Image (cartoon, rainbow, N blue to C red; front, side, top):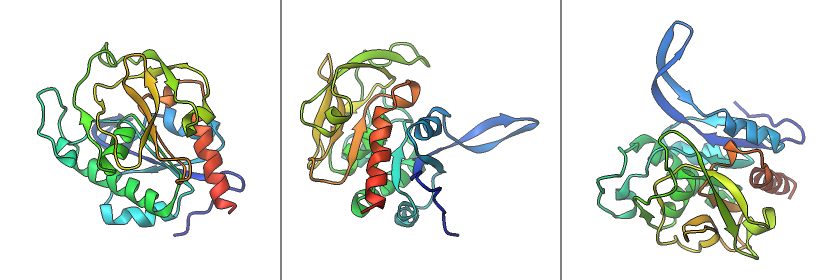
Length: 238
């Protein structure tokens, strides 16, 4: 079936959780879930949101070919084997199907030059997909279980992120892992006060790609998502 775009609104796919124990009405079943902040942020930024639940990795190029832009959502820790590391005690349980699907989506988007935004786990997966590594635990970025904290993020001048958000801003964050060694052709484009890499991207000449360590879907600022949507519009008009 052909996916039809609404005029003027690029189709932005968002990777999605598969979770057990979801309840609605009398039902408690496995469900494809996504925090509502993600599609709402896409919509507020001018895009049309589509959920992408885990699928066979070989299906990723076909899925990406139907999209104008892609968001890899936040979620569980990335399996350390993907970046050649042993599991440390504070690393969360693996999400094998989601890792495989989202890594395939990222690689397909990069190959097809589809604009890509990675959020939290999505930024970490982008780094891993390009050969980078992760810090498996750091303190201070998820201080209260189940509660988003806030901290300032400062852009690196001259980067894609700085073009979208030129000033230091306070962002909602909840993570205990972070980028360690940067992946191939990636550069840091924002930092927290403690030096943690908060945004990554390829050089400006590369297709529009950005990873942010925080959760823009939990804030009112649409500029990061709007930059993705604008890149998607520009690509479809080429």
